[in-house]
Image 1 (tube, rainbow, N blue to C red):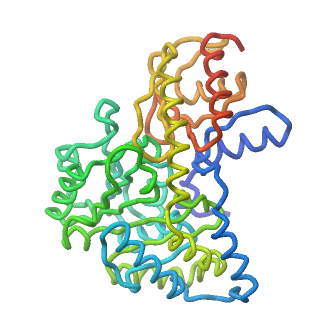
Image 2 (cartoon, rainbow, N blue to C red):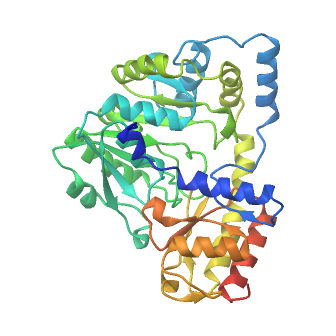
Length: 396
């Protein structure tokens, strides 16, 4: 029997595959250190957990409106006003089962077969697959490390064709940690308005910025706001990865399409998690500030250690919780008896010999790089980097 060609063309997420392999090795009793998952190592704050318990005791365990409860939509609108200076109405909000689900909704709502979506590379591994699932065509803007992995206005202009429907903007970025400045975002906004293309603005890491200002591209004018579809969620800011609450803010005509489809596909997001999400959004950012202080300390240490080793380097990221390690000078060389021809080779040998799990850059369209996550303890970071140094010195 022939199965779906579309689904058969979609591969597994490389980041989740590495994390799954790491967890299996650890379950088997192997002393492995993992840096693959994009998941805060902090616990969800107590007031959020208590709100979930309260929801259970209150019997808030039934179906809700498919696109989210009125109370949560109101809290999201208040969040945008308070934190981003943006005004949205509840009919412009759709709450989904995590930001991944939100993105799938977005591409399904705006794309027709053959529509092109511009994706700056390196990119989060799921973007191209989501575009393809919606019968869109991914088109890539290759960025350079010397430009902090950012595309220029000229590169954006050159990439736009008469088939371009949208640009994906992820700032702060997974996997590079780069953050666009307000001036850079304004230039991007002007081009998108000029060509009337959507901006799918993935702002899931918006609060994890260590240098520079936090700005949403939707804030510059009504024209760009009308073209922007903001995608956000609670997983990174509030350490709620498993709670699966994401949301979008955009024009009501797009919201209606996403809400209609979601009502058939998944119905409502978890009612208990929605109730807890209100507590998260209304509970202040003190927890986030402390988390950022810890991340910044880890980031600084990781980048300094990597840059102290021969043959590898890393640029200082300004947001998220990732470091991209450049291993291009090592390609073609032999380490611990194995010839390294690619980042995937490096990752495989490092895992088998040094028991350190990293994500190779090929999945991000970044050959010659590996991604580290510093969303783990300083103890693990030191252990992983010590093992990396021994590995580079052929001590395994």
